[in-house]
Length: 201
Image 1 (spheres, rainbow, N blue to C red):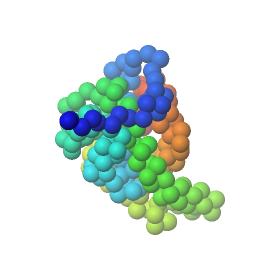
Image 2 (image 1 turned 135 degrees about the vertical axis):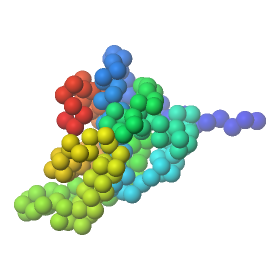
Image 3 (image 1 turned 90 degrees about the horizontal axis):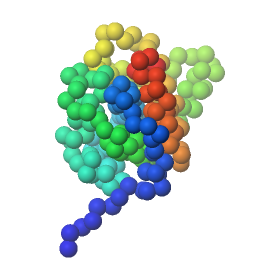
Image 4 (image 1 turned 90 degrees about the vertical axis):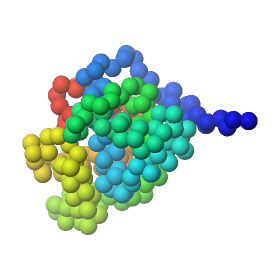
């Protein structure tokens, strides 16, 4: 008797609704934002493709994210990536990546909370975030990985990358919460409505 794949949690999936179908520019923005959030998770928690594939399996999403190649193609669809454009991300794939991101964020919630608390402490003390070991390591990994993978690395200053990395870190705290999937989905839709204002906004 063939095994039946578990389905993604329906109440959560039902929260990821759309009033209207995103246009190509909005989908491009959603692709970019999802890849950046995953990059932040990679840089902070040291996760790789295996953890992402395990999350897909845990959530019953292996029909969308089956292996390393399919995961790479999804992420490579970001318009910020070098050599991007090999694949167009559809709405179901975007929903799947939202679920995977929030699943991983919940797994690493303690680390995310510790990093955000440290950031708040450094801000209160008027100290640079990178002088704290945890934040410094995160910022270095984020910056190095961004510059390796993204097309506009020369046009993006280190100050811009630090701002982006810290903003994503704070976002991760919200995405690790019980309502994280809806928060991320709504953030993607909101940001995608301003797609022409730039991916780094």
